[in-house]
Image 1 (cartoon, rainbow, N blue to C red):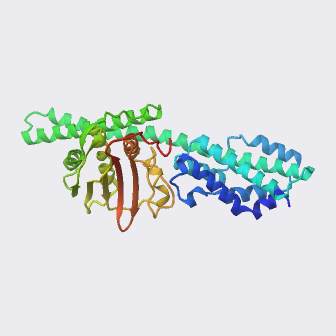
Image 2: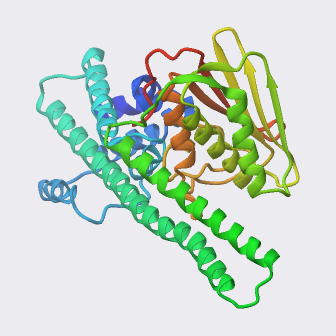
Image 3: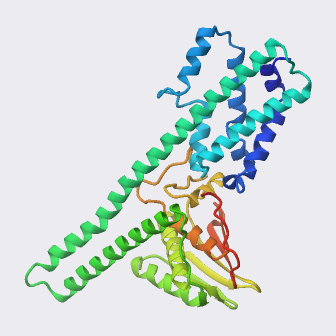
Length: 386
């Protein structure tokens, strides 16, 4: 049996090996089975079909030289795989590792089957397979790199957009304050606008600094001390109520909420979660914040009613510059109105406390983020995807 035929006949076992290896990678631990197997069958089948297509030595040489060409097909299975892995938080090392493991799995399986031999035909089959794998890897990496470049460009564009908004508000309020004969009520309103815009800009700059710090490997610093999480929840809720007085917020506190934590960082995390709930939730439904003390931990939840998040995106939403697709959307999209750093900062703060964060989302229950914070943190956890 030729290698191309062997691949087609053993797709299920090869793809199962692909899934098992992908699950061992940091970004793959929380992914669904379907997401882990993403495009694996299509990639293998396309390689096998290409192996069976008659080609001259000149064509093969030209194909090898074209692997690094700047214009690779954008819609191939390998290219789509690279794009989706970038969205899921895989880095290039993990992407390369997937293809390396796939190559090894196919070759070892073929060898163990007894179908391989030292004949010229078998050697030629291996060469064809390796050429196909290299081409698929090149397409995947090129698309991945393109997505990274697009993320960087979007990052800069959205940063300019987000800074321009509050800056415009400050400018308009300043012009209003400069008018003679302005009454006291209008003066207070303009001052409040300046304060709110300054707070927005300050929060954005803080998120950028925290993001940069984590990408440089320093992490977000934590100053642990005795902390009443109930007071932290009340402060975060009061701040969001001030900015959105027309919305309904419901708070539930129960049990012992004292723990060793960085109160200012947890306030920042809760503020980001509440802001996310305001942005993506149903404005006519209440936003909930609850904290419950357990024996060895405090559990905090923030919930909203709105479009449910697709199951395969539950991990990706904690990555910067990613907007969660809804369960009814066709593809993952980046936010065009937010840097998408809020949930990333939340994850880093929670992990810095040695805690865990997860999200559950459905049309029936809405979207609920659950933070589990140990009363006395031990070793901080490692993010699911660097």
